Structures are given as structure tokens and as C-alpha cells.
Length: 343
View 1 (cartoon, one colour):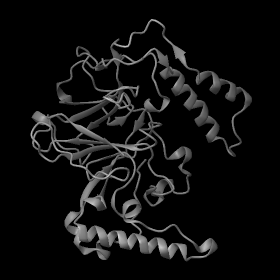
View 2: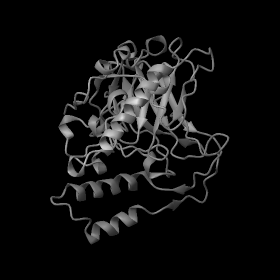
View 3: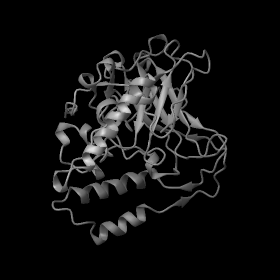
View 4: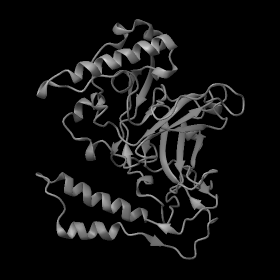
């Protein structure tokens, strides 16, 4: 089913004509639950992976012997989805509640070592033919694959994620791996994505205000404040949420490829290639929600009227405190190591 972004509530270029020079595009992926196969771009779906190639693993030392079973996580979500689909929704039955409690149990593997190879979770695969804003990979690779360690225990602070990105040429994959390895336990339920098909849609986008020229940024900030003041002066039921450049007119929420990164939780900082120092481009945004109460103007036309919970979290995948993860790649040499920023 197509997903269509509504027209923006205001023409931002009519208000600020100089923004036309900074206009870009981004492809909203619109992941929604489905049954993708290895030939499809997907979130949480099966990866096109050669049967004779080792599956990526995490070898960093951290606990992996205590957590949730992936099969239990998926089963629990099915039970909850069935309950939400009932009209009218009146909560879980006693049997469903008992089953959900059982499926939410933490399990242990006493013999697990902190350095046992831990299969990574397949997070997403993106074919260039499907995604208008996906750049070509090194040596004309057409498939970008993203993996994830389902434990938050990496880096100097032992709280960082461990994403793993691969490029490949899909036509060179002979016999695909039929049953990829899966971790026995995962540290967090929200690090296991639900299989989702994609509905790519290219839309216009504009940079984060803090990265625009200082004078233009100041005018945008003043306009935002004026919208808030006007909304506060409205009375009762006629009061509407104020429009804002950040949440209504520039960068869409949700999973997307290309465009501009949001820096709403930190000040912007340079994302230069660590190999050649070239400023990097945004490759992929992994977002915890497709929209929320603050960004409802981006809700697809086909889903207007649906509440954010549970419909705005189709992948069931969350990063940080329901934030977003931005991946950056080198535009000069896409094979150089990626970088990421958590917002």
C-alpha cells in the first residue's frame, strides 16, 4: 500500500526564499509490517547473504548470557497486535495477559562466555533500485545491509551500540543463506525489529536550522517563537499546536535515506570521514517512530486518524530513549568506514 506525505502546512520557501538554495531530497522508507523476502528492500527482513560467507558477529567482550529470546519477543508482539486489532479495544484477556507475562521472562545461558561470537541481528537491507536517494556503493555495489548487536555494551563507556554496515553487489550472490544464525538471547526487546516491507517516497527536505547561515537561522528561530506566542494567545478548543520549522517544515521523522540529519538533542558537530577528512553525507536515519504528537503533520494521508501508539512504531525497533540514529558515509569513497550519531 502506498504511503503519501501530506503537503506541508506552509510553503517555507515563500516565507524564506533563500531556503530554495538549500533544498534537498530524502526518501522516506515507510516501513510497515509484512513478509519481505531476500530480493526485497526491508527492515528486519531476511538478508540476501551468500551461503558460503560467514555471518557477521560481535566479538567485543560483554555479557551475552542473560536476556530475552527472539522468538518470545515476536510471539509477544503478535499477541499484543491481535488484542489491539479487536474492535473495540478492551485490553488483554486473562489468558493473553498470562501468556505475555511468560513471553516477557528473562532467560540465562550459564555457560555463555563474554567473548563468544554473537550473531548480529539483520536490521535493514536497501537495494539502490528501490531507494531514489541511496548512493552507489564502492565498485557499483547496489545493496546496502545494516546489522546490529542486540546488546548496548560497547565503546569506552560500555553503553554504545555496535552497528555493522556492508555493501555488496546483489547479482554476484549465488546460493543465498537459507537460515541465518540468530542470537539465543538479546539484551533488549526493542533491538529486535519486526519484518517490514518498505514503501519508499521521495520528499523535499531542508537542513537543520543550526547548520544554516547565522542570520537565516536567527530569522527562523524568531518565526518559531512568534508561532508559539500566537498559539498561546488562542483560547480553548480553537487553540492549535504551533507550526515549527524543525518539526513541520524541514526534516521528516521516521526511517529515511539521504537528506539532512537532525541535531535536536546535541549541538551539530562535524561528521568528517576519518580516512580522508571529507565532510560526510547522511546515508540512513533509523528512527524509533514514524511520527509522534509533535510531528503529526508528517503522518501519511493513508494513516490519518491513527494514534501514535501503537501504529507509529511499526518496526518495534527503538534506539536510545526513543531517539534516532544517523549513519554517515564518505561521498568521495563510499567504502571508507561509516560514522554515526545518536539523537
